[in-house]
Amino acid sequence: MKTTVTYREIWHIAFPIILGSIAQNLLNVTDTAFLGRVGIIALGAGAIGGIFYFSAVMLAWGFGVGMQIIIARRRGENKMSEIGQTFQHGFYFQVPLALSLFSIMQFFAKDILKHVIDSPDVYLSTIEFIRFRSYGVFFAGINMLFRGLYVGIAKTRVITYTTVVMATVNILFDYVLIFGKFGFPEMGIAGAALASVIAEFTAMIFFIFYTLFKLNGRIFHLYTRWPFDKGLYDRMIKLSLPVMFQNFLSLASWLVFFLFVEKLGEQALAVSNIIRSFYIVLMIPMWGFASATNTLVSGLIGQGKGEEVLSLVMKIVRISFLMVFFLVALGLLFPGLAIRIYTNDPILMEASLPAFYIISLAALILAMAFIFFNGVSGTGKTQVSFAIEIVVIVIYLGFTYLVAEYLRMPVHLVWTAEFLYAFLLGYLSYLYLRRGHWRSAKV
Image (tube, rainbow, N blue to C red):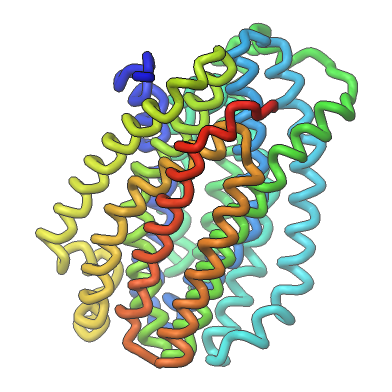
């Protein structure tokens, strides 16, 4: 059945998130660009340290997505009071999770990474990065809760404001802390980590003040003192755990990918960090439309319009593909300019070009696959999306191991694994949505 959701409604939810993602990813771009001027060791260590940190934070992100799905369903059912109750119960999980992740990064990162990083210089720089970066997990976890609330109620403009503030603060402190400007100490890679922590803290403060003074919290009963509801808490965990581990495994697989690449040499690792940063820029529209997919699919089911879900997902797929196609076309027209953002080393620039072309094309497939995949999550069948992610990641890492470790092929050929990942993720997700077994999902 053709969906009643218009392109305008999809755009209304997705566009602020896309703008916010642009600002959010300025953190990644500026960190990589600044570290590219420090040297290839810092560039490589920033890649491994950053992915290690975000692998942990993806657990918090996954819980936020699970909460977002529940809030969107309650909004679709017009049960506004339960939105505030759900939001408050999110803190009962997110705060202990942040404490656990911080402890792991502070006390176990050295032992985990010393067995898998070959270069002593890259290892020491990575540990220095994580030592500072780990403090950000407390602020990131709370930010994920606010993000889940605002996306769930389809008021996403604040995400744009928050991430613009965060990106601005990060750029400023990157400059002064990495290079030691305006009387600040020259901290190098540690400065990049600390700048990101300060930016995440600033975003959290902005979310809090915006919610207090701009959002009518009484509509959603945000300020009601809700007693602990074990049944709700258990439902939130049951729904969120598959999303949490799915997101964790997705980033963890990228960490493993980079550890395979690191064994090809420090230059291959530096090239891959540049390519990763550009790839993430291409993913910006996907994240916006993926969040819109989660919210709109869950809301449709809450309204009893489950028969419109596949039509809605196909509509979002078309928009996502067109936006990513536009970005890819720009990159292919000016490849040298895009790479020069991250490094002025001519050898590194030339070595990055083949992988640059590969991920540009892979992004076109992922633009569709990511929407199908988030359509599965939006139905509430998060255990199914988790199972799909596991199957795809196992095949993806097996291929990466074959190409990088066993065959020892050039780094750009290792990046062809992204084609395999995107195709399998999209195909399996589309098949599940077509079969319709998700219609009975309860959240």
